[in-house]
Length: 567
Image (cartoon, rainbow, N blue to C red):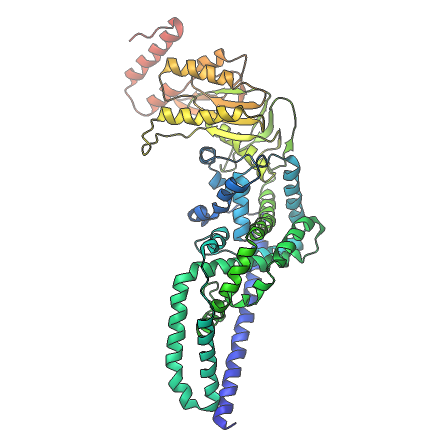
């Protein structure tokens, strides 16, 4: 070999070594960053700023459970209840999720509370496992973070896109790769021929690869997500922690189905499409020149389709471990969070001490023990709606992640429904009252199922119609919902209901004090019906003419004394 050939060999070797160094350094830097993130984020309550725009992607796996989950295992939270309780915002409190599968599974947990106390206990045992040992937490956390996320998509979305994918063949891309190899070999034989061939070969290969990436880029991203999930599942299965034995066995069984898929996986999992370092950029050019990802595409697609059920199981199992660690971090963020106790049999009941709303900066804790329905009365802005939301959120969190924002919680596993923040359905041509009737009807229907028992929160029953019909219909509906398997909390301004239904519902209220013309609230729940109101005082504070408010107060007193309205 002449001197020019030797120089070419040394140059090629130097390039390979530099490339290997950049890849290794990039991996080490990422590992160090992951460790720092895991340690710094533990027990953090800092809000995640990015999840809101991705919620439509995150929820795809949860939505799929509605069609595929075993009947009776879950008591799903419907859209009305999720909106009333700001469940997406509650999900944002769980800042410790490290992977897309973990994020997707955790959201699915919140939208699908369990009905089996034993299954809930298993989740809490996993959470306690992560809370107990920092090193194990970091070790498994690195595996979760290594699985990572996909830009603008969820793992479930990306992998599910493979269901519609079509084979592309491998002969064309193998031939182009061979042309690249032969061109490089001519450098050591005849540099002149190398220079002549280099430009057209580069152009043809780069153009072909970029064109196919545009056509099947989403499918390649799906394969990359699948391969990352398989790789991370294998790593998690190889750990030896006895507390995760059941999950590790499932992950190993599922990952073993994809041993053939691992061939060539490095090329699908590397490059600028999944990384941002210099080594990733170099890998992307290597792929453009030799097409290893396109050559492996059909083989990987076939392996996925043969084991699609195992992929779903693997995503849910792997995600559950990451979700459990995030839940443990959430619980560690506040000493006021506790574990629920679940009861069985008998009339539905709800006993909570120190209940608070997890989205409020300075919540006021409340206690309640209810063995029958509750009618909540009180002034505007006194805390009725917040209490109803707090009680519903506590039940959902208790049955989904085994954590409650309260000092103690004791209740059965409920199906939770709310009817609170309703509005006109303009696109559907439905008035507020019609929307309200439909909302109440779903609670009515759930109450007629044998199990699970229903916990329902209703804010201002039938507010969309006139007073006489509202009171008459509300009294009858609430009376019919006084059942052993239903626990209904209803807030109302109709004090008449507190008398009509006192044999069926317990009366509780919030109240206010007026000092120096200001209305002040302590947001504490009290037994009995409310005896005061603040609507006229608030109208006065808003700047309405004083005589107008004085006359209104006199009109109200006359009605209370005589039962007649007269202006």
